[in-house]
Image (cartoon, rainbow over the protein chains, first blue to last red):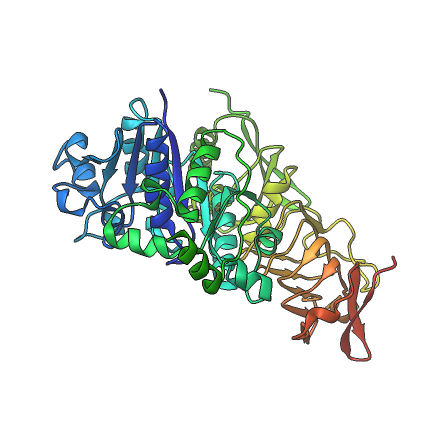
Length: 264
Length: 224
């Protein structure tokens, strides 16, 4: 078993890197893979919160790199899913506490044991980003359908190409079909038109994400949300399966209310 | 321990360092030794690097530049066959051809045809290409990318970033900018600047060429 290291990055902040990392890690683990998620956003850790593992942190990434603890001690096992682990970021340090070489060494130590190592990159293009991308076999670029996010994604893809990590695969997050239909939001095709890289998933804007983030329970762990289904599909595609893209429908709140009424 | 991997020659274009095949790290160490051996000979001079088919990255070229600098030698050109090497050198503002540094019989109407840079990929946001001659890009120029050429710029793709053509005073207003789809952020030819119209719905599909006519930048269908 030799793990695939997948780095999730975006350039711009707030587009859903951490949510994507948490959900893909959980979805891959639910599909029977052995997965470890690494939070590379040192100083602004979040992945532990989104995954609901915050209260179990004892050691973190920097402790491992500095030799304060053994690798195994910093790995938090998720009790809800078999074979899902998290290495949290340090809260009180900064990005310079770790080097790209450290990240390569760390992931190499885990490659034999896992199927997937997912790295949650910080926003930006500085040291933190370089640390996160250095060990990557694949890079997922997350963007939202906004001009500024797409511009940053384009910049990031250029940097990934310069590092010879390939152009990466694209996740378009928080798409709202009602706004696309009105012409108020870029459509997936507009984003692809600029970025010209492989699309691996489209995730609709979904209130469930905010609820699940606050609860520390990734949406893929419950059924019934379209965002959760979209993340499960991306996980399947990472596994090499050919899954058709979900037909995203606009659901106006009025129709939703009526259908919920009849369902109830 | 062959010494043939690095050879240094004097030519009409000045000193040229030929870099042969071998492991890059070993080669640059060898170069460092050679320069140290003949420090007084090289001191204060300028040299060109000839790398053949080897693909050099920008950091690699920079590292050579630093070694040379340590020996008080200036790097002015990198000549290589790989397009990536040329591109990296151009991005660092180095010449990519060892042709005479100051072309003599050059008229503005006949810019030196050999001195064009070919880029075979899409330029993404934040990427910058500067070249003293013409630039040909096979790929798109995305929003946020910047191209600056002494001569003309031809984009075999969509031009959505910023392009500055005719930066060389010798060519200036005679430079043109062509693209299969011309919807730039900003165009500059010599000292003229044009912004894209705010409503680009009127944009006609198809190749266009921008040039200076009567003192302003005008885009017209590109019919060859």
